[in-house]
Image (cartoon, rainbow over all chains, first blue to last red):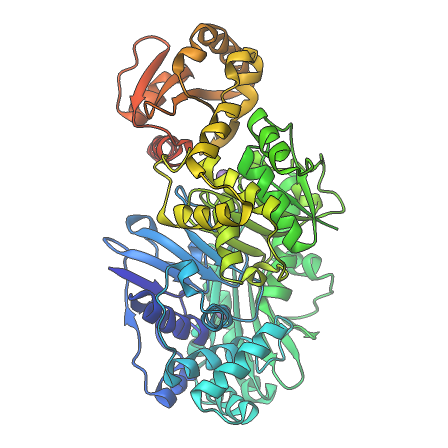
Amino acid sequence: MLYVVGHKNPDTDSICSAIVLAYFLDGVPARLGGVNPETQFVLKRFGVMEPELIRSAEGKEIFLVDHSEKSQTLEDLEKGKLVGILDHHKIGITTSEPIIYLAKPVGSTATLIGELYFKNTLDIIGGKNKELKPDLAGLLLSAILSDTVLFKSPTTTDIDRKIGKKLAEISGIEDIQTYGMELLKAKSTVGKMAPEEIVKLDYKEFNFNGRKVGIGQVEVIDIGEIQEKKEKIYRILEEKLKEGYDLILFLITDIMKEGSEVLVVGNKEAFERAFNVNLEGKSIYLEGVMSRKKQVVPPLEKYYKEISNKK
Amino acid sequence: MLYVVGHKNPDTDSICSAIVLAYFLDGVPARLGGVNPETQFVLKRFGVMEPELIRSAEGKEIFLVDHSEKSQTLEDLEKGKLVGILDHHKIGITTSEPIIYLAKPVGSTATLIGELYFKNTLDIIGGKNKELKPDLAGLLLSAILSDTVLFKSPTTTDIDRKIGKKLAEISGIEDIQTYGMELLKAKSTVGKMAPEEIVKLDYKEFNFNGRKVGIGQVEVIDIGEIQEKKEKIYRILEEKLKEGYDLILFLITDIMKEGSEVLVVGNKEAFERAFNVNLEGKSIYLEGVMSRKKQVVPPLEKYYKEISNKK
Ligand SMILES: [Mn+2]
Ligand SMILES: [Mn+2]
């Protein structure tokens, strides 16, 4: 049986893309972790069930969406049969046999699914010619709005806007902006959440030239929402660092101001050198930084590669 | 400027796919080595110029076709900007930024270009909507026939046959079989070639868990063509082994008998264990083995991975 699955600590793109792609591939949508409040809002809004939680690839055919890095996927991926990947991140895996791989630098994985659908060419990646129903179109639109932070993130492309508009028509969403604000508010329930939950909300682990680096992110409409929890979050990160990390960053991204306060734990020199900044204290505000993928991962990866080459 | 380039020791698929994709991407077709006799026949047949020979990625945007492995591409790839990959082999690279990547287990890269063209969806990978002229259709058809050995190789899929037929119509090739035999004969000029040339004709280097492995292949219509050169080829391989190789295989593939005689130099135990055979002497005939990619690389990669895990 074919399982379509997004990354650990699934976000709305990982959950919604898994659901919709599984529909076209006649597979089972799956997830590797809990459904966050924003995604819960989306599933409820369009009346779609949560994907199945899986813990092992054993005996399964696997199609990955929204990621390819080993650190973000099923721990025993090699026990299953990886048949395909659909993603909008950097290429994070090598394989020992040919597979289907479609990646493209757009704002979300959902954008790619939408693009293939509207071009009637999902069969390029093994999909069936089926109709995209309003509920599933709503999921894809939500994933695009979530990943691109309402088309504001620097990862946003014209394709995201174009596909988003078409999906809105099918899904019956008349005003994308209004719906997007509802979505962001659902995301921004951090005010009510415990610091432990906030840290886990959207946390990704990376391996940069053998060094383990964690990068968490939370998006808020107003940085004040989280102000009093920052100290506690910092202590949680310090605790987490002991799990073999070289560095952990936590981005508190202010959607309205379009910038992020970055909490830095561990190898501060790596952070300072990678971003060419001077870190005084525990955190620094980086104007214009909203995208982990596009603005945080590349300089870190470059830094760790350089110091590794120097050895 | 965008350069579209196939692998080192280019075969017909690497050359023709680079030419045709460069046309759709408004880029420059390029190559990393000499044009083999089969490809020369194809270019002459359709009146198309050889791509430009390049040696460095510096200052260039690069789109790879027909490969992704570092050992098969530009040595200084990281000095250029890798923007995309179109391929039908296993995933052999990771990147530090999102790129376009389309891979699919079909018989040739040319098949994928044809499929995107006929679905009017080359823009998925950044291509323009242009007409495929008869000469370029002829190149793609030739690349499919070459890589699939006239649809006989086990890598052949229904998509290759379907796209091949459509390309034949555009290119004005009325009888695919007849043209295919002409092509294979052009390939099989090994009778007139020096052993040194035969070894280089289609030679690929791999890195399996840190071990350097070389796999060359020559396709013949009759194994007798090459019989008297085998001893010399073997000695050339023994010499080559000293360049840090753990193992070198050379496949003499009999297109008509649909099997390969494999010359084995270096770590013979690795070969025997990977293929579960008993090697007496310098070579062994493997019935049904025609595809390096599908039938030779996977068992070797698996073997080297296993011994590396045991350590
Ligand atoms: Mn995503
Ligand atoms: Mn090929």
